[in-house]
Length: 205
Image (cartoon, rainbow, N blue to C red):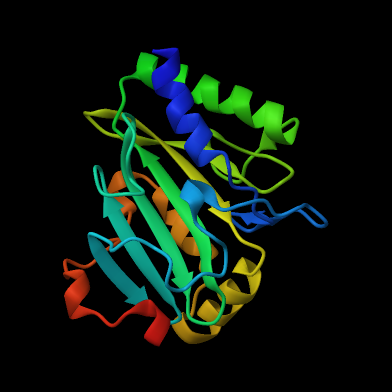
């Protein structure tokens, strides 16, 4: 079981962003994006399962089994590609877990985060923590099914992208992560059911 968790931990915790859910870490270093991706990239991402666009942000959505959403405990990965700044946010979702499974995986992620990034502090959402480097780890409920772990990593251009998103969409891009931790009944739809082929390539926006 430990190997199973370490595969997930190793893939997700590569990222060290400057921001997570609107919390800034001034002067923090920026490490590599997860899954071998590169911050600011607009083209070097696998073909997504679905895409969604709002204002200057295109969400590239990968369901389990479609790289980079691989690994035993992975359900979904979302890459947020900004029109001007390129890739600036990676969101990883675990599968729906029983409470004991969630506790085991969460502890592994916490331990690995402490080794790589130092002590964490309480995050902006219930049952969330954030490291000084800006990586966010949180838990959300799936009523009647279990719990789901969410990890968010952001690039150093995310603040500019979020400010532009506020100008164009009327709300900050940070709000999209906040919505993930709302009670299920109040979460707005996160994606539209459109095939990638029906939407322009984000590098052309």
